[in-house]
Image 1 (tube, one colour):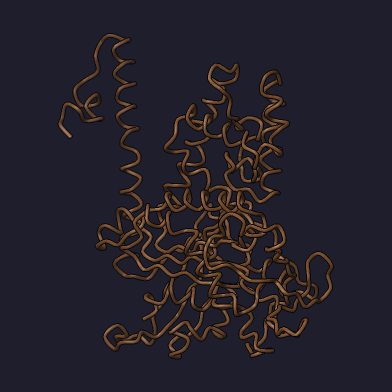
Image 2 (cartoon, rainbow, N blue to C red):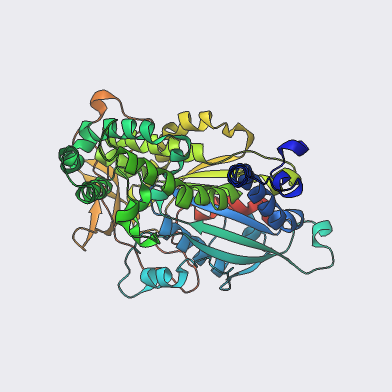
Amino acid sequence: MSASSSPWRCCSAGWPRDAMAVQDQTRAWLKRASDLLPAWRRIEQGFERFGEVVAGDRVRVAVTGLSRSGKTVFVTCMGHHLERGQGLPFLNAVADRRFMGAKVVTRLPRGVPAFPFRAHQAALAGEHPHWPAPSTDLSLLRMDLRFRPRSRLKRGLAEGRNLVVDIIDYPGEWLIDLPLLHQAYADWAAVTLARMQAPLYRLWMRPFLDALSSAPIEVLGRAYVHGLAACRDARLSLLQPGRALTPTALDVPLEAMVFCPVPPGHRFEAVFRERFQAYLERWVRPFKEHVVDSVDRQVVLVDVLESLNRGPDHFDDTRAALAMILEAFNYGRGAWWQRMLAPKVERLVFCATKADHVANSQHANLKLLLQDMVDDAARRVSLDAIPVETLAVASLRATDTVRTDHDGQRLSCVRGVLVESGQERIVFPGEVPPTMPRGDEWDDQRFDFRRFAPRRLDLGKPKEVNGAGHGHIRLDQVLEAVLGDRLT
């Protein structure tokens, strides 16, 4: 940057005498200074990460997924099994008896909300276990892991080493906001209105669409938010602004920040354009810069079975939302100084959740189907440079696979307590296709995967029960894929 273009020039060259010139020069200085803020933030964050990168003693894991994909249960069970240090045979540090233990760190930096780990653990371990409520705000589960390095050189004189793992949780709705950073209000409004008028969304957004022409701004805003909530209940994903669906995380009244898509020339276009921009600067950009851009590892959770249940349009909606999420993160490897200034996701795991809702024989197909779902999006964000795993998982196993005879056939079924009835049943869940269904393969009766209540989370010593392993399916493989290289 030349001396003449420096934002500090107005301070060193003397103030002009004309008051109007002073105002103009001050505005120009503030504009140039504000342009530098993102760079200064990156440098500031880089200094904060310097010691961590050099020492290699911290890793940040983002648990990513759409609403109701199982993020809260996943984070809870991840912390639960690490704290116990057992029941993780595919985590090499445990298998090699090098894992010395883990503890939850309760003292966090000021202003960082703690993930309610104990409350969620209690909900799953109580006499009447129940699935915990979804996340409504950003939170952090920090764990301090102690292990013995594999090599004597790394081990040095110390008996063991520590690795601090930050597991970051946030509402899935927030992720869908990230593409807004690359859109103007008019472009977003045109695309969103077209989506809301399509058959998949129109049923739920009709009150808003009917109110567009004449409703007062408060009524229009409420109709839009209610429509978004109805779409979410119908398991649709492309819903913006996402924070309108988690209003408890806002520090201003919802009515003051909500913006709606309106056509060009609409009487409220200017108001919504201003709110759109304010929303980006107040919530979306800080979330991107301070959370999304700070992670080293990522776990992407996808409820593939629910997407099959809902039919082809919902399936495509989920694929589009996953593509949006992947494009918001930075992937790749770099030297330590590059990781310090511009951290990137170095390891990625895609997880098809609720694998226990189908028989064990269907897990391979479930994994293949998830790979097919994310393949196009993965190519667009160039994931070739980093290790990528795809797994069919269950954070907390709710069923057993059993074999039954029906009309002379031997069927693989699942046994568990159904959410809808509260009764234990043996259910034949059907087969999972290995690739995305086409055309008439979307038969109305083909996909009907049921929802099961949780089994009680075992706080005692891990044990084998009815072949159910350690109360989870492949959670240890997820941990090895995400943390294994840092526990060597």
